Image (cartoon, rainbow, N blue to C red; front, side, top):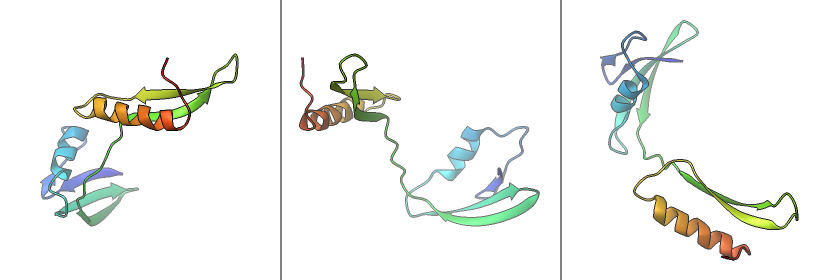
Length: 103
C-alpha cells in the first residue's frame, strides 16, 4: 500500500518520507482524517478516526537458564523514553511476584 494523500496533502514516492506521512496522520484522539491509498493499482479512500496508540518499549518474561534450567526474570528495553524507568520498575515488580529474587 502507498499513501497518496492524507488530509488533503498529496504525497509522491519521490519526495515524501514516512515521517512526512506520519506527521499528517497524527492528531487529537477522536478526530477524523481522510486517507487515500494506492493498492495494486487501485485508489482507495478511507476516513479514519484517530486514537492514541500505546507503544510498549519495555518487555519482561521468565526464561530458563541454559545450564541449570532455573528460571530467571528478563527485562528487555527496546527504546528509551521519559517513562522507561517507571515501566522497568513495574516490570521488575511483576517478575518478583512470579518468583524472581533480587541478588
